[in-house]
Image 1 (tube, helix red, strand yellow):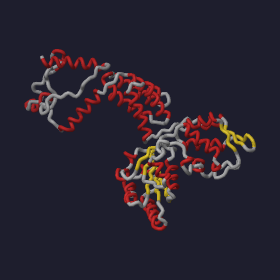
Image 2 (cartoon, rainbow, N blue to C red):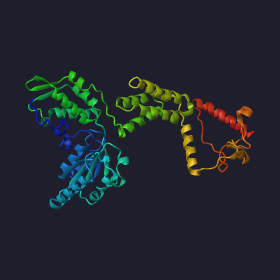
Image 3 (cartoon, rainbow, N blue to C red):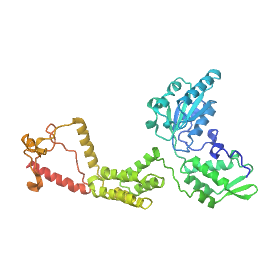
Length: 435
């Protein structure tokens, strides 16, 4: 094949040079929007581009620099340090002094810079020496220093939809910069759609797979290479989905799973459980979160939920993958199907807050244990009433809180599930106290 420039990945060879070649992120590039104006007017500002992989963060930064005729300096936070930043600032100052040219300093994966490294940009963003553009897959609110964040505008990029990815695939197949020489690449529309769907909104993944397909394409005739369904099936056989084990996508998906359980949507919960498992999430993490859900969102409305979930956890420990995932799915479906109550969770938080606020109050004498004569002499256990000796096994009116605060009530059972019975029983005990 008379390809050229194959030492450079396809995604880099055909990277868009202007907005006409760029697909996706319409919500950011609307007419008269701040980002489009920054590009079309050639007047960029410091910004954070936040979004999933393969959504165009680096490409947009380069388009912005090109439109402004600015010097473009790029660093990866993984590979660079403060020394590199200082060198970049020196270069920027020289350009500013000699050619009056703006410098855009682009930092990929800026969330990986520590506080000191991020702070190193501040004076030069402030005085205009550089226009700072950071790219991150992580939520800037958590990963970027407030001082730097306050000097930047945050733009959130979204995963590309399938139609946008298909447009990118079409462009890649036709772009002379693709390096196919005089060859034409043929690929049926249905195969493009499958590749776009598989890429899961990540254009880079789509183009990397497309490059593999092109490399192994069959020679249809002297002028044409053909990508077949068989080739695509082999390329997609890994079945991978985008899943960030430590970033926003991870937390977004576990949040969706938890909320689907809380919202009593068994099918929704199973969908997110499966998405996480198929994406490579540690099943033990989901099992631990499910135990939390059993107490936080089900509680005493169905006390068996905690037992079943713990059993599912232990079943997974014994079976491992892939057999053990079924037990976890069993627990997730049960939790989502239970009557819901956060009364245990609310009671625990209320009690914890009061303990923190009131400090270490002394235990009342009548509920202290008295294993020695001295303790008995001091009044430990005096006037304690043994509940099993009284009617209904309940010492009506006996108190258990520190003397300084009197009686408190944290737990308010709901009318749902088993908790309805608990509520009725506690109400009955209150009537005994009032007698």
